[in-house]
Length: 259
Length: 317
Image (cartoon, rainbow over all chains, first blue to last red; front, side, top):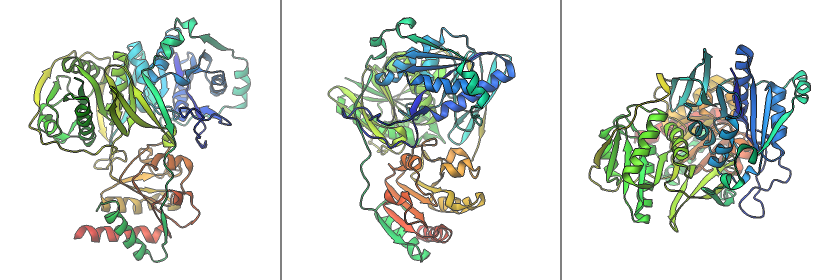
């Protein structure tokens, strides 16, 4: 059972976001990039499947050179192959990225394609389902539990207040939710082994795509802003809990117009 | 004349809140563009509600319960029949599952989790959170139709004094490669943090799992949902469906009450667009006080129960 795991690189969650000079991108100075947290659950699921059933786990990333670092980390955790499609992904919209990934996936042996449920950079939650559509595969999103047996996938999809149990035959796209598993850390042995695995690199042209295909501007970022600075907050002493509670109620009634 | 098509879902015989909100902003967009508002649902019982929110027609699919593939085909048919140039989805699980699939099928632009939408210069412009709410991107969505999923609670649901929408039945293929086997209701009756107007969140200051009962009591009394910091979810005190923050949900309720939450940058990112923020923490330097509208420096173990009592009194009048 072969898997492809699509890895997105995002700014570390500790990052204080600053807006860059053009007002449309973040200032990348000093930003540390990590594998998007939800992708870790996806990778772990694929590795466990490989451990149980054999096959390859290929991690796939589209973007500039720094993507290779995330692919290398994923190899260290247990992925067996890596493919880096080089390109300036920063200005591509989700469908542009999905087109690249779908073209790359078609060249890789796969039964399942994994994504995290969203990339905590742009938080679009779009690329996984778009790739599923482009490949003509069923999708099961926001998965908290996964069983695979004899080419059939049974997954728990998390929805509001409930869980749907969905079945699909491979090939299929799965997007991982937190709680699907506990992602492992890379072991020293894994890190050493990963150094020996070559990361396959391709250009867009190698996939039969051109930059203009990808940068087809269906969704253009006009501007990027920080949230407004909050001001006018006040602090009160909670030593008298009843008095504090009454003040909170007053605030909720008068300012929030609730209750 | 651009027509706006809104994907709607029915629950307990009425339109879901997210659908009513999407219809409401959809109506404003239709008015600005000089076009009509129409809706899509799986149940013709939605026609009255849809009309009340301004929809002229309700396209009703034969597809039955939600299924990604059959609904993508059905929505495409509705879009073609309505000649829609804007399609909106409320940001429910199904809306977020379906919108990207439809956008890829139609090779068109889509923006997710938007909290501002306008029709300007013949284009759809939207604002959406990025980096888990640490920044906001204003985007222009091109392509026809332009598609957006709306953040729940971001747009008010406003009735428009309309008669029932005209029902148009559409019949499309029921083929799909995925099959729903069973639905398990997880927390019956629990309000979801993404839909709630009021959220009461607990953090590590609660000290142990069982103390979440203080949070639940307040949430139930005030009619809100129970939220949680990542630390409490990782400690196994509460299920991750309640987690607010960067690897949880980004929420925008009217009122956010945080008790024993210090306010790590990842948590703040997830709730900073709440309209009214109240924080209760015994540490006067806790970062959460920087964004709280009303901060109470005190012991949550006395303040929260006192607040629950006051809420019950206030509601009894």
